[in-house]
Length: 116
Image 1 (cartoon, rainbow, N blue to C red):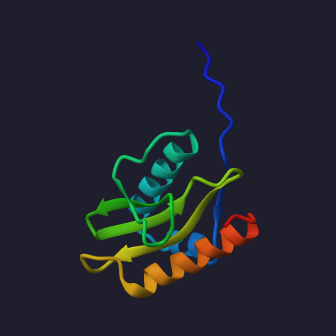
Image 2 (cartoon, rainbow, N blue to C red):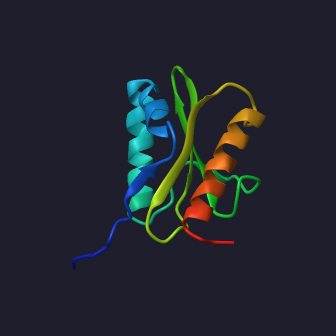
């Protein structure tokens, strides 16, 4: 049987693509594989919700020998998967600066999509 799925494009907000490109090669490839799963309608292998940023916002967790890396995204908007922020994880919790940046980008997308 053939499975026909229309994959949502991945759109990077602000400098998120540049930040992702600064990940070590192995972490960058793994983040790409996980985003590809999201594109095909599946869940990433290691993720958790980040509700303080906004409804439907998730964090992909990538662990690599050089450390931990995060990709914050939202896939609940109709036309695209938006990568809000990418960063190396340096503490147990997401820092206020990282949360604020992702939240600002989420609000901007929501306003662009004319959603409440």
